[in-house]
Length: 108
Image (cartoon, rainbow, N blue to C red):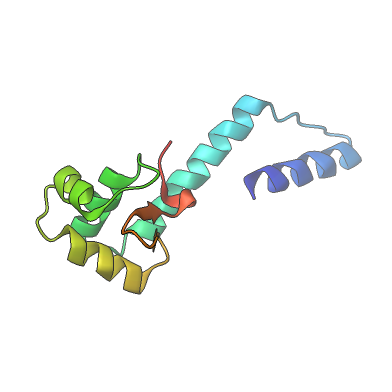
């Protein structure tokens, strides 16, 4: 979305003759600022317990309840994940109990 907006701003500026040039560094900086802003607004309404659990499992492509409990330090990690599954679309689960965090929620 940021890339499309910046491309349109660059195209518009070129038409007007002002032609700002957005480097890859500027684009990456804008993407990071946008992501941090969106992440804050998406996670702000969630209790600290939910935010902490998501933050701890985010580096993993897949995890199970045991790993989530160990990482977050919560014995009730399963109920936190189930609550997030009911109220958000952050998690999906396969047939053997492995959980995947929605790609856009994962940290790099």
